[in-house]
Length: 113
Length: 115
Image 1 (cartoon, chains in turn blue, orange):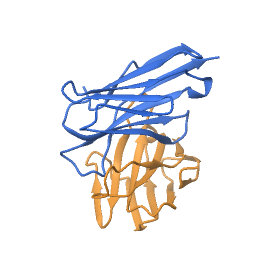
Image 2 (image 1 turned 90 degrees about the vertical axis):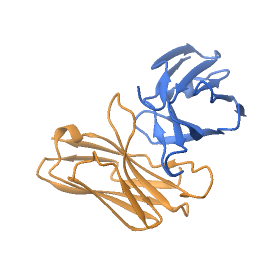
Image 3 (image 1 turned 90 degrees about the horizontal axis):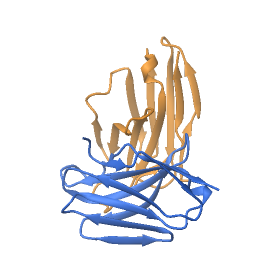
């Protein structure tokens, strides 16, 4: 499997519910980032968590990182229809320069009003 | 607006055409990237320009040719493309190596269709 795999591939929930997306990776990392992409548009950076951090919050977003399991999760609380998008994790590896990120295949989140 | 612009937003070209995609960043960044995004595939990093260094993905065919005249502008020159090259081409920029976290800022993309 590839670096930065998201799970599930697709998630459909009702407005107000929480959405949890998971990401697994293979190599040692400097940091892990989550991005959002609306259909046919560019990616927008959401949140970054460093390898020495375990949890981070930003508004309705909560990210966790477990380096022993090489996994991360993104939780969106109290979801809104406007949260409908694809969500990607991206890793900055220790083995490459900080300029390069490896992206996963993404999770398509649909929030139904 | 992320501070990264791309033109054109949509492009339809034949396999014998030559065209160029343009990207411009207004963020004072030192690194710029080209990505290819095809349906149901991860983003594929094509080229990186970071300060004076160019790094390329060796799997990118020679029919794609990047040009970075300065730190604010990036081009992707296209010639004799194939239908499988149809995809969303995304440009991104970041502060560059040694600048910490290196979050990337993306443009809106160019939707390319090769007939």
